Image (cartoon, rainbow over all chains, first blue to last red):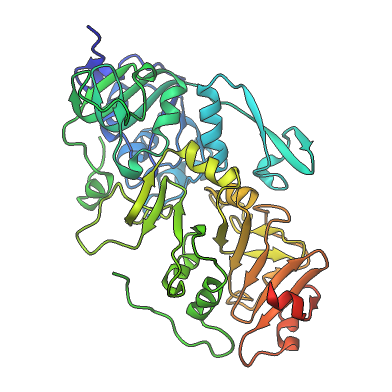
Length: 236
Length: 229
């Protein structure tokens, strides 16, 4: 019988080594796998490269991982939030490297990485500082820039519900980067609020097929970043 | 459902709401539209009676509705500005790769964005002032201008400090090159043409010379043809 459940977030992230590349799902707080990130902080891996759309809020979740000094480099489209100084402070002190990527290029680089496509051309960012130093080529009248697929050692994402085979469905706009990230890592870990037996999800409605998922962690009542921040929480 | 307007009448030309109202007139019924964060979001309030637009938000929702009632929101139902929104009947959720396939694949009809500067060639700068200690952040702006069929800019004609925003050449880092189709400001509606800026319409009480003095490149006067576009 196939059962991808792992007991506890700590066990699910225990083998992430120093220097690993880790994709972390979420757009702002929507879809951020806070319990998995906090387990990664507890675990202690450092010199990480984090691929994520943002850099977190307050001093919980992704911002707390940065604050703990575990991240060497961030690959990201929007590392700015109204209520966090963690990333800006580290960046200005030169303690974290930033690779800024247009959001659609980031999504496509992850998708390409997961689909075995090493690189692709796109017109996005041509004529801007983000295309400087990259290979350019015309397709007809359209000038394009070469962008490379991204693969990670681990992906950490949040779903709404999974079955024991690792098929996943999501909640509203919390889906965001999770499906492409699930495809692009050596080990994909999904935290979900509900786990059901294989056969209990509607096969027509599955968003991430189980082949992309290695470990499922049951987190029945996931914390919400904005609620933690409103309560003045910090992690650890 | 919507907060009361904080708009104040403009001393000269159109107010912020007026600009949004004017822009909304130019969006056909049934268009798939992405409204940028901030002032461009105002456009949704002024869609003429009888037209339905379908709003795309790049974090993964087509069929976005207005803000929820107080206490009725879902922190995982948000827009690209990370504010809570609602969904309309017929809405759909999708992942980021699919969302940007809509944008980059030319499936969206219109993108409405703010601007720091627009050049007479249609170059747009709207993501960075290039200051050394600023944290660079781009989000989906470069994808939107590269992929969406038409790009409208909604902006004040000059900054609060009186600096021109419609210029010969952008001095800030670009978001995209030759990407803007039309600019809506407090003073005028201006098309980007192969010959440069062409005024389509002047705000009430504003004359051509007044706008030219506040524009960093030659303005072409309205033509009957341009006004009809």
